[in-house]
Each structure stands twice: as C-alpha cells, then as structure tokens.
Image (cartoon, rainbow, N blue to C red; front, side, top):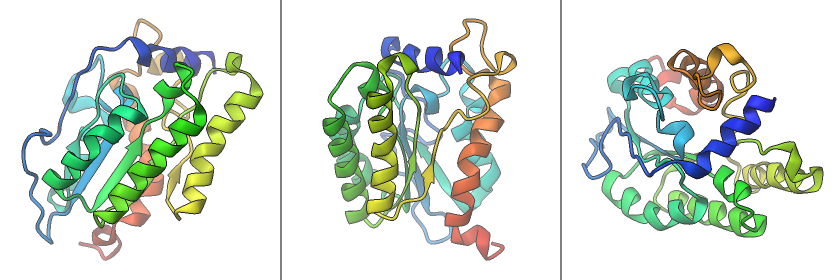
Length: 218
C-alpha cells in the first residue's frame, strides 16, 4: 500500500508529456467498423518512464486490433481543471464513442477542493455524454496521511458520479500493482513495463462488457 502512495505522489512532479496511440492533433478514424476510444488521464495512462508501446493504453489497442481506434490524450501531471479545458477540442477532433476518464489524483495531492475536483469530473462526463460518448470512470487512491475524512470523500466522488450518471467504474487503476515491488520501476514510484498488462486487466474487467463489437463476436 505504501508504494501506492508513493506512486501517486510522483504525479505532481512530472513534466507535461503526451504519449499517443493516435496523436491528439490528428483526426482518428471514426467509421462504424472502427469507433474511437479516447483515454483521458494523467501519467498513469501516459506510459511514463517506459516505452510508449508497453503502456496499458497501447496494449489496449493491440488487444482490440482494428475493431477500435484508441486515442491517448493523457498528460503527465494533469489535473481535472486541465483535462476539462482540453476536452472540448479533443471531443470535436476525435468524435469518440467512448471516453475513459482517469483524472483526479493530482487534484487530491495538491489539496484542491474536492468539491471542485468532483465538479470538474462531472462537467467532463456531461461534455462527453453530450458528444454521444459513453464514459468509463477510472478511480485512483490517495495516501492515508491525508486523513480518512478527506480520503473517504475523495473515493466517494468517483462512486457518486458513477451512480449519478450510470457510469461503469474501475475502482482503482493500480489495484494489485502499486504495492508489489516487482511491478515497480527502480525509483519505487512508477509501474514497470511488466506491470502494464495488470493495469490493463483492471480496466478490461470493466471495459470489455461495454464494447458491443466484442460482445457480438466481431
């Protein structure tokens, strides 16, 4: 559990880096045979410290093959406010059928008001849904030294939004990864390339049931 806390702390110091399966400035294919999945997160989805092709987002594209086009709009160090500012242009450019929303950890670590964080997440959900995209919400955890009251409210923001907007929820992106030394980089902060399949597994458990092309054996 301690490595979970360290891993999240590192998000605050990252330089903005955007690793893409499809570059954010490019228009992704949006045909019926290849709907777009937009991953909207921070360093945990940006393959920080490992080759981009080893990150869970790229592994997702490999898993899906040509059935879906995955666009990774994740930026290391991103907050919900930053994500909200960037999202309208991304929705317009890529016209995603799905948005995997993985933001909020940096807000919590910086002491940004949780009501503000929740409001930003909620607005992103509304924007995505208004653009006819289905949102999958991806949660993260904060260090215990923030106190149980703060952490409980932080966790509740994801659960409440998922319930309010009927969103599929991944409770913790790094479940089974962050507190395993063998799955962490040498700095003890970042998941290794070997850990990324497990990260993808955590997402896939929820995402698989939301993709009709797979459900119908396409």
